[in-house]
Structure formats: structure tokens, C-alpha cells
Length: 322
Image (cartoon, rainbow, N blue to C red; front, side, top):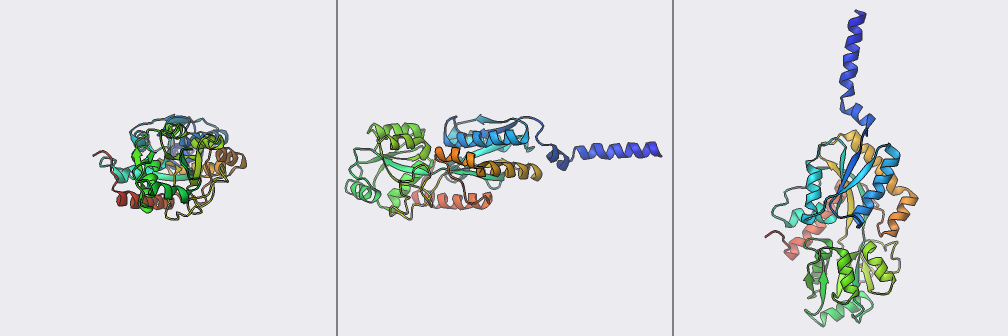
């Protein structure tokens, strides 16, 4: 009987070792991959690497960032969505592919809220409106008047479906402007061309535009968000500058494939938020123009942002892939 009892006990322990609870308790036991849909060096990549280092330090296994750019961010997102939901693949996404592309593309059949497990809002990435020094105006109110007086003369850049593209089109709509959109692949080139006077204006990430602003090579007129960016404290928000309807934003979020064990998601969420809240990490992110989100209700956050951009793209009639 004693032998039988021992064998039964061993069997129970063996079965338990394969249970989700036991797996979560021992997680991670090997390298965890964090997929990013953009090339190294951008805001999304920087946020992912910053959080990854904290997770590596706290959880004792490497958290490594894999850059999978292309197709408006959907290559990386779909790779993460198709990954085994075991906690060894995570995703740090940006506004474009997370909530915008599914609303303007005929082929992007996915939902960030339905096809992923929410982990954390990893950062708010303010966008700053910069204009060429050839522009006469020094503030947003005067710039709007200048543009309105010269319909069709001015240009702005942004890749199709990106926040810069939609923001420029939305400003045209809410202030009855006629600024021409010029497709651009990335923010760095957009900023460079504003500096060179080849592009009149650009809605660029603070991290990308900051050096050009501080060097006096462009004029910064307004930033997105409810509060001024810590990286550009002298630049007013769009609301402060007199355009309260301009409520679009950009940000990054961490997600896990649908079905990832809840205990693992909870652990990664806890440590990711701890990383974001750490003063040293917050300072490092702030230098790159990434601000802390006041909310960590990721699902509610994504639904709100999806609705904000959905209203804009429907009003503007923006489509891609047609």
C-alpha cells in the first residue's frame, strides 16, 4: 500500500508540474522574445528595450527585442498574434498597427482587444507639430491663419495610416485648411526635410524632432496630449494653443498572444508597470519624449483610442490597400 501511495503521489506531482499554475510559478525558464514592428532606434523600439532590460533583471532570463518591420506594422503584429501563447512571445505595439490599420485596411482582419491579452500601456509618445523656418508664423494660431490664406501651398508628411498622416488630415478638417499630404516612410526623414525646407510641416515624435527643435532648425508649435511633454516643456499642447478638437495621440502598449496563461500575464504586467514607474526608467523614457500613462486599464485605453481614430478616419475617408 505504501508503495502504491507513493506512486500515486508521484503521479499527482508529475501531473501538477505540467499545470498552468506550476508553469506560471516557474516562468520564465528560457529566453522571452518581445516583437516590435519597427526598426531599431525609434520610440517603440526604445520603450520595448527599456522594459525588456528591467524584466531581464527582475525575472532572471533574457527578454530580447526582435524587430519585424514592414507592411505598416502588421508583419510583426501578426507574427506575435500567431505565436504560441505560452508567455515566451510578447508584443510591444504602436498606435498605427494596433488601432488604426484594422479600421482603414480591407485585409487587416484582427483586433488588438480581441486577439491579444492586454499587459501594459508602456508609454505615451507625444507628437509635436514642427514647421519650417520659412514659415512666417511663430505660433499655431498665426500658422493656421497663414495656411488658410494660402490654400494648397503648404505640405505635410507621413506614411499612409500613421498618426502623422491622420493628424495632418484631421487638422485640415477641423480648421478648414488645404495642406497637401506627402507620403513618407519614417519620421526621421520627415524632420530632415522640414529642416531643409523641402517640407513645410510634420507631425513628428518628440524623440525624433527634439534635436532639430533645440538646435533652432525648426519651429515647434504644439504637442499632442493633455499635458505638455516633459521633453519639451516650453511647447504648448494643441488645447492650450487653441485647437481643443485635436485630441489624437500616439503611444505604445505591451500585449501577449491570446490564451497566454493569466498568471504569466499578471506577472509580466506587474513587472512591466514597476519598470515604467521606476524613477530612473521614467527619466530615461522622458528624455526620449515618452511619458507615463496615467491609466493601466489597457483594454479601456485601446477601445478609447480605437474610437478616437475611428471617428477621424471615417470622417476623413482614409483607406489603404485599395
